[in-house]
Length: 273
Image 1 (tube, rainbow, N blue to C red):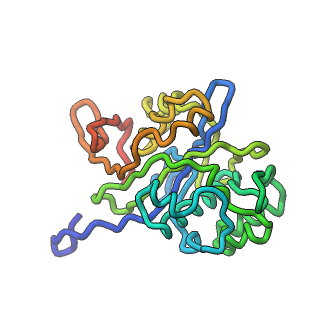
Image 2: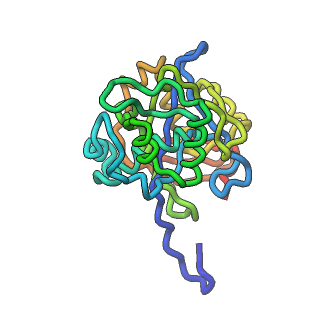
């Protein structure tokens, strides 16, 4: 990129973000919940992705009731400080609830998980979170709930290339849908949502029916190694977590995303600008 006077502009600072691979055991095997972002979105319009989004300033609220691995432990897993780790875990829980209606929380002081979050009062709370009229800490406190970080596992860390005008520094988590809850198509940012096996999703991506960004392609490929939810949770992360920033190449055959370890991901269509 160049400025009006022909000078190079500094790369955009990547915004911290969290995304969650929601998994379940289906009739055809392990399934993952995928959203197709609406066309015209300022970032990744038309792309298939997981529930997730940018960190909100209030995600770092220390008042949030917390059960499971501490922010310090999550910081060690993701290579960040305790505050950033707290923000990422809270963002993962909040965004999952906002975009799929699944809440990774339970009654304070118990090992239980809230079994049903489909009533009108829950929908009002979800909408208030979306409008930022309500913080995650406020919602949980009002209902006597605590965030269950033990329901999440660290999965991957991707940073968008410096050449991208809209950059995200994204930590990927994986979580099983709690018993009694169902992922629902509630996200206004998606025009399609549902469960697929990793193999089926990748087949549609390869054919051009379901375009994806490189992180989604790669993490789906990793997810396809596992046989069921228990296998996923027992063996994540699939590789040591380190920041992955792809570079892009084009040849006579296709356009490719090339990862630092040399892995090449074929892109079925050009990435959105």
